[in-house]
Image 1 (tube, rainbow, N blue to C red):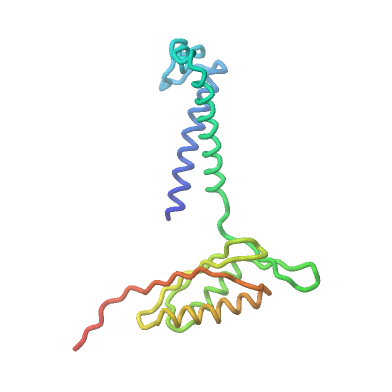
Image 2 (image 1 turned 90 degrees about the vertical axis):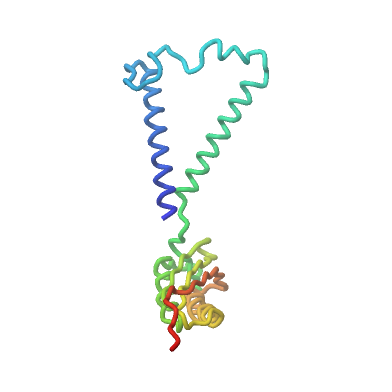
Amino acid sequence: MLRTVNRLVVGLVGLILVVVGGSVLAVGLGAPPPSWWIYDGRHDVLLSRADRYRWRDEGWWWPVVIAVLAVCVLLALWWLVAQLRRHRLSEVLVDTGDGEGALLRGRALEGVLVSEAESLDGVERAGAVLTGRRSTPRVRAGLVLQPHAEPGAALQQFSEEALGHARDSAGLAALPAEVRLRAVKHRAERVS
C-alpha cells in the first residue's frame, strides 16, 4: 500500500514538473503564455537584473547555486531510479552440472515456498519474496501463526522443510532467509 502511494505521489510530482517545465519551454520558444502564467511574456525573466547583480560581488554565490541545483537533480534522479527498481527477483540460476545452467522463475519458487509453508502445522498463512541476485537469492518470508502454534517449532519446521526443499531443488549452496512471525488475531477463549 505504502509503495503504491509513494509511486502515485512521485508520478503526480513528475507530472506537475513536466507541465510547468513544458510551459516554460513553450513560452521561451515564443508560444503565447497561458492565462495562469506568472510572467507577462517571452522576454520576462525569473530573476531581474537587480536580483542577479545583488550577489555579483560575491564570488561564491553562483557556483554554490549551481552546485546545490546539480545535487538536487542528482538526488531526484537517484530517487526516481530507486522507485522504479525491481525489488523482486524474477529468476534464479540453477546449476545443472553441464556448465550451462537453467533459469527457474522466481514466482514459481515463491509459490512453492508459500504452499509448503502453509501446509506446516500451526501456520495459518504465509508469504515469500525472493530478493538478491539470481545466483545467490535470499528469501523474505512472513508467517501468520495459528493461536496454538509455537513460534520456535514453526520457524524450525519452515527452515528445515520449506527452505530446505527449495534450496535443494534449486541446487543452491545456501538460501538465507528473513522470516517474520505474527500470530493470527483471535478472540479470547472463555473459561467456564
